Length: 544
Image (cartoon, rainbow, N blue to C red; front, top):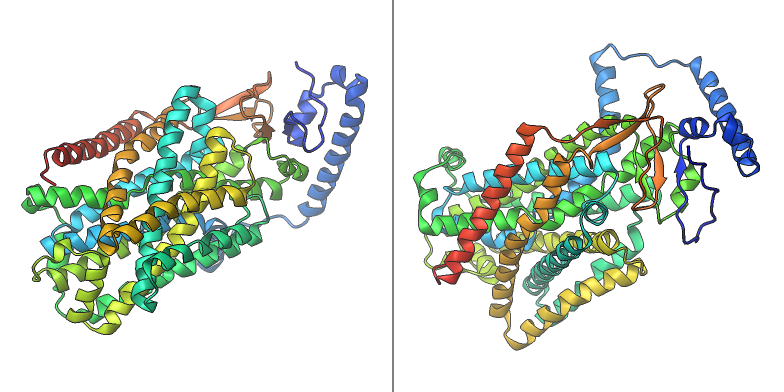
């Protein structure tokens, strides 16, 4: 058995593997403990074990009583639910970006409610992919970008990283354009000035987002973004309430497949809805937001040493207890958030457009400015203002989330260890420059072309990003959780990025997908890739 490495001070070039007390006691056998370099470590472990045992003895008198009443069970469930709420709301932001406004409005204006089935299908795909993203991050303790660096060949990792950066830039451009258009509509701010103002969300992320900080600060940040999402939802509830000619039966039929879906123009719209709904950067986001809850669980149950969180060059592996305690709740929270916020808003946009714009010539080709004007003329001035407010909240919240993912991608793929504020500022500047150039040279019509182009780019990148994630989720090598043999307790440890942590007393619990889920994953990937290939062929032929 290898002797444990001595602890290193923060800032050392080498990472410091640290494990929980149970693994440390097992690793430091009496033979190894006799060595001088391990004497102090053994003494510290024994002291910590004594303290932990005393704490358990003190808590034994207050044994947990299993709730029997409906109210007590509900309270326990609500408390567990409250601990995982947050990531799903942040993820849902990715499905409310300005690109969704444009594509859903076009679909409603052309086909009224008949493409609601595509909206439902796209959200089902999104929910499935986000559940896998959440599972990958929970089981491995790694985000998708870090998984690519650790488990893929270097050349392939760099290729995927390049596409991921293009994805971030394209997404950020869409958020910038949407926010600038909303500011122009609401306050008559010039587009160039509005684009510059959108850098404010970067400042908010700089001040508020601390993924390695306290859970209280993280929850405050999530609550702020949740308020922006709630504002978008409320805006479309008001818009739906103000539309009088909505036939509920016709709307419900729209959620069922029909022969209209196979028409050429409907296929184009379907591809656009899918590309605007399932966002590639949300897969990175979903896999990287679950770790703080896992760490919180392990800390509360004394499975990790608090000082280990000071070492930023280490990889955290959650315990099996933490995984089993949070995984189902985390996936459920993501599902509820996507269905409550993303699916509702995307459906509401299409329904409002179908009810108000379907009889207006050229409404299908309208940009965001024209859509706002049509809503003002067909419904009321207030309807146009509400639409613009929803667009502004969507662009602002989307810019915040995109900035977060940009840093996550750089750190995960290539370990770009520059200051976080500088990384976020660079990401936003890269998005601002092309938007500013287009706004100055071409104007509002050019911005609409750029916005549509970003949705095409994101559609192409989606299968490139989703492929590795689906592969990792089906890999027994990646989805293994180390467990001690003697008492089935879980190993919770911090390791250097490429260091294997196998020990002689370890077993592994495999949580990889079986053949059924793997087959579903292959079908979803082939379906998405096939739609994108169809779109590219039609674009090359000049038919779209």
